Length: 192
Image (cartoon, rainbow, N blue to C red; front, side, top):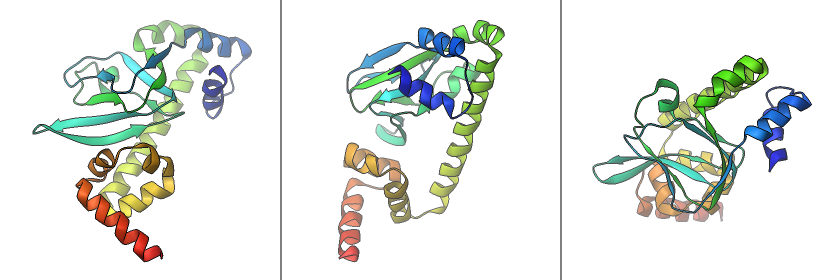
């Protein structure tokens, strides 16, 4: 598990052995069962999540209907906005699969950053990367048709089509499960 985390971090910075050990010592590996709600709307959170194994989902409740906005799988990080601006969450986060996560608390950041400045740089680089990827994904989503969104998902994240229940995928794509089913059938016929 430690190596998965260190490989991810190596994409951003080169850490000394001491810095790697500090991160491993701090890392809080937690197991969560499928269906566990990690964050609720209105709840304050100090935690960010790094997925070592499993899948977590973000969703809003709109008129008693869940609207899925994101999925996070292995080697992906979720840092809810409320962690940074100390506001209640506007959405829910739950586990779609049994998951092993690193749960990092913002409370320990200040002293760590003072002692290990490279960790502050690392957090900044990861945050910038996440923001950039989120912006690109949002832009692509806004300018695409549901079919283009689905094809894009299959190209960029083919694992999700196999791992995520159809009704969550449909919600994420902004369509009904029935529309997704019809779209899949139409695409299969096209490919034949």
